[in-house]
Amino acid sequence: MSGSKVAFIGLGVMGYPMAGHLAVAGHDVTVYNRTTAKADQWVGEHKGRSAPTPAEAAKNAAFVFMCVGNDADLRAVSLGDGGVLAGMSEGAILIDHTTVSAGLARELDGAARSKGVGFLDAPVSGGQAGAVNGALTIMVGGHKASFDQALPVMDCYAKRVRLMGEAGAGQLTKAVNQICIAGVLQGLAEGLNFAQAAGLDADAVVDVISQGAAQSWQMDNRAATMAKGEFEFGFAVDWMRKDLAIALNAGRDMGASLPLTALVDQFYADVQAKGGQRWDTSSLITRLR
Image (cartoon, rainbow, N blue to C red):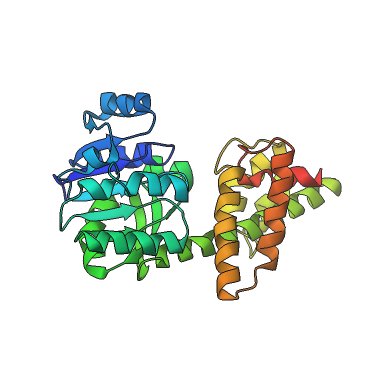
C-alpha cells in the first residue's frame, strides 16, 4: 500500500526513522513533534510536511501514528482540542506505538469509537536499530478490521506484526516482552560477572555458551559491550523502569505474581542512583562490580 495520507506524532529515536520509512514507501506524511526543530529536520530530510498541533497533523489523514514517551504524553497528543482525535475524520485509524498502560489503551479505544475512528494499541520491540532498519516487532490490540487496513502501512517498518486481541492486548503483550528481557539481562549480568571473577575470557565464554541453551538476543547483542563496561547502545534505564512499572501495576491488578520483575526493577533503581538513567538496560552489571 502506497500513497495514503498519514500523520506521525512524535519524532524521537523510534518515531523519526519510522516516519521516514513511511515517506520512503510513498505515503504522504505530515509530522508533529513537540520540539519543532526536530520536525523541521525531518521535513528537510524526507520532504514531507509538519503541522503546529497534533490535530492539524491528523486532519484528513487515513492513518495517524503516535510514538511518544508515556501515559501523560499520549493523553496530551490524543485528547482535547489540540489532540489528534479532534482532527481525525470518521473512518480513519489511530495507531499508538507508545508503550503505555492497557487501561489507557482501552480509554483511547473508547474515545476513538465515539468519533467513528478505529484504534490500535501497537507497542513495538526491536529498539532504535529495529526502527532504523525497518525490522520492528509490533504487538497489536484492537479490532481485526482496523488491523487489516493498517497492516500494509505498518509493514513499512516491521518484520513481524501480530494481532493479539482486543484493545489493550498489545500493551499487555509488550509487558510480557519487558518482563522477559529484565530477567534475561539480570542472568546475563550475573553470568558475565561470574566469568570475569573466575578469571575466564568473557568473550570466549559467550562464544561457546551462545551456541547452546543459554543463547539469547541480549547475549548476542549486548554481552561484549557489557563485559567492556560500555552502555550507550540501546534502550535507556529510565524507559525500562517506566515499562516495568506498567507491568508490575498490571500484575497487581490481575493477581499475577512478578517477584523477579520487582527485584530487577529495584536493581535498575540502583543503576539510576549511580547516574545511569540514560545508560542502556545492559548496565545492570554495574551493580555487581
